[in-house]
Amino acid sequence: MPGEVSSVESLSEVGIILLLFSVGIELSLSKLSRVGNVAVVGSIIQMLVVGVVVFNFLMLFNFPSAVAIVLATGFSLSSTAVVVKMLEDRAETESIHGEISIGWLLTQDLAVIPIIALLPALAGSAGGGWISEAASSLFVSGLIVAIVFFIGRMVAPYLTHLIASTESRELLVLGGVALALGTAYFTSLFGVSAALGAFLAGVVISETQENHAIFSETRPLRDIFVILFFATLGFFIDPVNILNSLPFILALAVFVLVIKTLVVYILMYLLGYKGKTAVNVSLSLNQVGEFSFVIFLSSQAMGILSHEQASVGVATTLITLLLTPLMFRLMAPSWRFMKSFKMFQGKYHKGHKADVKFKNHIIVCGFGRMGSWVGNALAHAKIPFVVIDYNQRVVRDVQASGIPVFYGDPAESDVMERAGVREARAVVIAIPDRVTQEEVISYAKKANPDIHIFGRGHLDVDVKTLTDLKVDRIIQPEFEASTIVLKDILRLQGKKKDYVDEQINSLRRAHTVSLE
Image (cartoon, rainbow, N blue to C red; front, top):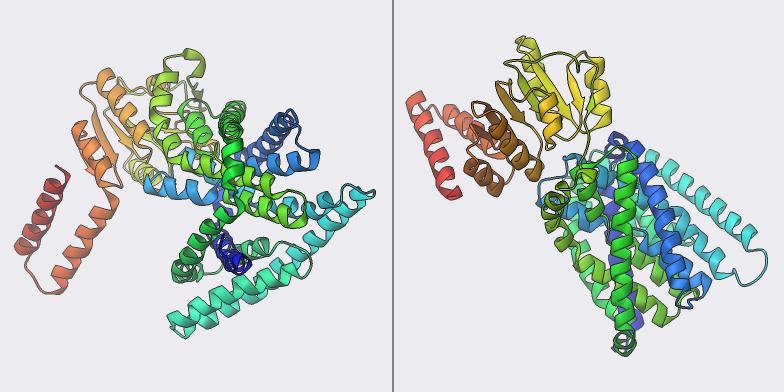
């Protein structure tokens, strides 16, 4: 172990502060509001149930109760940073399971505030009066959070706008780091976690118009310190202790993954989201998150966890994080396997226009940004159409406007049948979920060989998949935007229409070749 470990650990604390600052910046309360009911209710119940189950599991292995509480609480959290990155890479942040997962994670992030606040009380639980100490810790933490939000809402927009007006990238970096570290230091003066203070600073800045600029400018610095933070995690792990406890750590990691998957799936089912959506959400949220590191290391500093116990928590967390990409790859095959059992299939819920018999109509799968624009245009042109969506809020809004709508997963055959797929003229797939796209296309072509299918794909691999499935028209928003920009630039340069058309066609041919 290096001689100056404490100095390196101090630098690593800056890494976790900047990491949680960036997580706070990316937190969007508007995203949480879109799936608020299922995210808030589901997340809170999941944390409680998983915490209780894991606590009892640890007690079977003679862990002290305070240690079991800390470890179980940490294991009940999932990773916002990892899951959001995986969803972004798969272009699924706007899918229904993506929105639910993100809302679920944001609720957990906010729940860390009272968790961190209660750690000092848990550290003194051996003596009497721990209940009053816990109440006092919650009160102080709540007061500090309120002060940070109140002052931040008044000061942060002015400061960030003032810094941005200088048009200096260096000042923007310094300003962002100063806000993160300054808020972290301020909260630490009152016994509140410095990392939590940085997270709150990020939440405040997320509501300013300069939030994206600050995030992009501070990210390289954050990445450097985060790498250092994860490197220093090795200092908290004793190789001898890990080797001696390796069977238990592996068993604990598997137990946590299985329990979280089952609990989330059951909650999704009870909250009205069945089938593929429940499978995807449960597999995406079964790892342990980055806030758990903060909880474990803070607990060790307070004397709640020993070095060996903190090592178990950190090692278990790292194993589940390393398995997260595998969990995402298992989503599609897991759903296809479970789909063969009727008890796991989702059920449709008809809208108020369910008794209408459709013919030569358009089925719009997904009524988000793209789907709603298509629907509005169809309504204006007086072309009959029906909407399928798995977001209860969207379904209520569409019902209120008098549009025929069904609540359910369009990947389910009974939902498509209820929407009249056999009599439909076309299907518009406005859902970013690639698995749903494939299943809708497959069933629609089987039920109605003459149907026309319109799909969208963000990534080139999605476009290639849709091409292989013989979709009639594929829209790739980013590519279409590039053709519009090129067309406008060429016209601005005074090029003739024939030349412009030839260049656009050449671009499309090159794009087609790149997909082959």
